[in-house]
Length: 141
Length: 108
Image 1 (cartoon, rainbow over the protein chains, first blue to last red):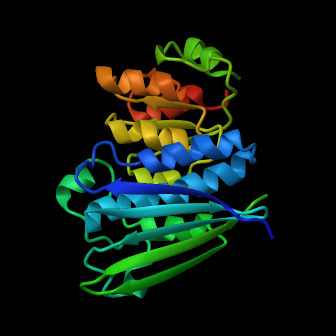
Image 2 (cartoon, chains in turn green, brown):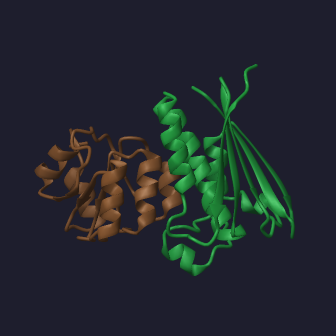
């Protein structure tokens, strides 16, 4: 198996207004690689939701996107507060976001469900008070 | 029907049409961005009253054909520049979301 192509991003946690830059850059990169529009759409939305989550809840973090021949792995790691109850967080509509975040159109409690919806597999490794790492795999179609 | 044809046939205002020949197919109405990303399909017209900078990102990532700002909502100048760069078509409708949807219904 050949080595994956890796894209690394530092997600700025201070700038909510311009959040999403890494996802938009990934969309451009994948388009250059000639992937299908549907694969690009799934990767970019899954990553954007994760990126927004890191900005809202964890003051930023790091994102690595690994492009293999048959799949794309997105690894989002933060040193935020961790997720107390994953089952609760995975429910559509459950959110701990502030009113300010909601007024911008986020905080609908659809972030993690959308990440699961658009990925073929998703793993959440979280420890309260330490941080969260989310790994998503999306097959290339 | 293309975005330009839709805009003209409904009498809406073309705010920014960097990809004027893009075909519109179906529509989705919503202001909560994650709902839009979860439910809207590629090539949809997205009807919303949100006009902050995140709308540009969501429109781009969801790959919708155009954003239709209902209720005569205006775009800020800096978002206009971003939308143009990212190839996001933006139309403004003076009508509320429901009437806007009725106007485009049957055409897309």
